[in-house]
Length: 159
Image (tube, rainbow, N blue to C red; front, side):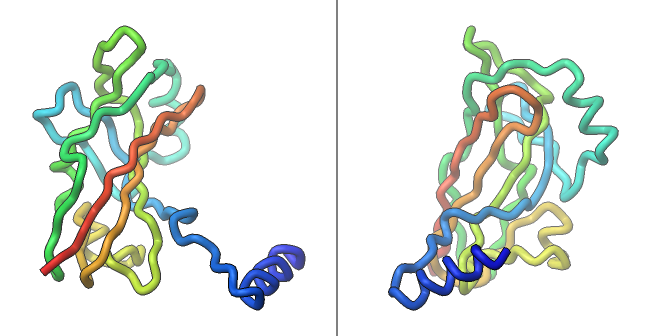
């Protein structure tokens, strides 16, 4: 722990900033859709440890994630329901795999562009809340064993 503090202090004093793009926080867990025309099932904590073990029991290899929309455009104080995202897991044979466990994470930015506090009522309800103009990113990634697959969704909050 001391080394981390020393490295952080050295970077701060040398003018090198740590990149905010390296830190994502969980905003929800869900299951992939069967098609890009249907939204995902999502909740702040969809899986208890035993439920995730069961959901990952029969791991299916995911080659890629297809996401719609691929960009989130919001206005200040606007809201976006995470269950309106479509995320389809696709295997190497280009077959959709419905019901694959995923986690949604948002880039932590200071000052925040979207509300990421765990006690935020919108986030607890599965809704992103834009708090100021700026850019943000949401990462969607698989949760089960095997190689993890991820997809980044860029977001912008503009008046």
